Amino acid sequence: MERRDPSRVKKGERGIWQRRYWEHWVRDDRDFERHVEYIHYNPVKHGFVKRPADWLWSSIHRYIQAGTLPTDWGADGWAIDEPGSDYGEYQPP
Image (cartoon, rainbow, N blue to C red; front, top):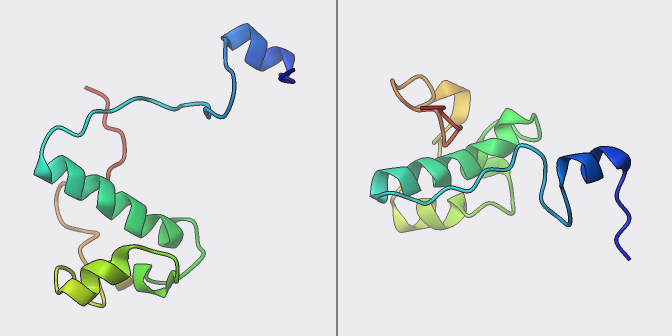
């Protein structure tokens, strides 16, 4: 039997889903790209590494090897300050 604390029962939350989870359909290539950027930048955002390429388990290494992204992508604010680069963060309508 699944153990749930009273707060989760009250909110109807179950299983592995985290709070603040929202379902999202990837709308187009740019939307997909923004979500991949979000995933690549997350280890930096949370202070685990200084640049995305330093995270050994990241898929960014495939993008760098393919020549799609430069080695220093996301380092020292590179590309972070571009207008509209919110790295897949939820933007309410």
